Length: 406
Image (cartoon, rainbow, N blue to C red; front, side, top):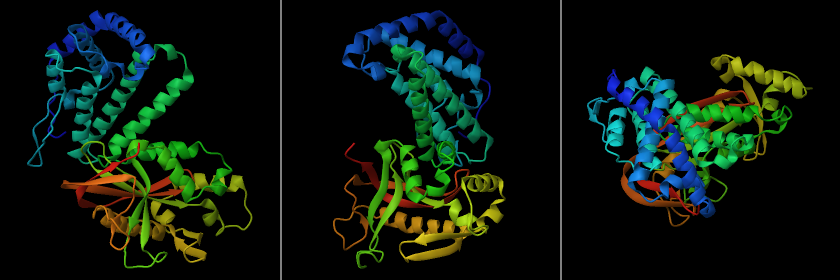
């Protein structure tokens, strides 16, 4: 969010504190009664969206949102996002949002459920990521604030909507993982891949030492699929690359991961490359064990990137039916070129036969739309501890993409 104005008025903060202290117990008792009422219908997890809107429920929703904002204000700095300007780089922000607007809507009791409040909150962060550089201070403040907000919502949802699961460590851990994945997805479709990379590394580090011998691109593909919401993730998107070519000679292609947007933002394509430590260590020694691979993994984690990219790497190529020797840098460049060709085909929309070029995957619905961006990243994983990624020049598409069947 460009041009933040500092100085959150004291009367707003005082009001939040006052509302929170007077209503906290009342809110909790109210939602507990609602939970009991709707428990038989299995509506507990989304109870706020199912309740008929009355004066009492409207007040409770408003007070609940006030309590969330009060906790957020205590734990983070919301002042840079209190009041935003309406322009960024001489461009009008079409869907501007700030805390002043949210407070005003709360004062007027405009929110009919918690989901509406959450949408406005995430719009603040989405605008921040869209209209600011990834290296800017305000961008990082937005990431920190959204992370705290997600955690607060997570904790409050667990307390208010899942009373029966209190003390259940397994449940809390599952909820925590789900929110981390949601946050990573929301950032990814804005073009910020960092939270997703963090989740990927955490997942890789949970694997056993012996897996360093057996992990390959197929394993990486499965891990990445598990870190994205199924509703928006299309693994191995089926493409007709060039209908004039013969099968097996470049006629078809499969984009590793295609992430469709929910609303706004961008569609994302991920090209995955995995560098096995076995293909690196053979250049150093003929005999090695799991401990040697783990030592190499730790060394590569801190190695200078230029030196890392120059390392020779050997792997078996199914396409050429022989061992190929290249550098990690060449492997990265190959991934970039491959992704560019995939995205050019995806941008053409759907094809109805095998003789042209485009998407032929039955899992995706494609409709004509206003021009929108297709963003892409190559992710190259080395062992379990080192991950390189490169953004690739975006492509403009005149289509919208939706996953069907889920």
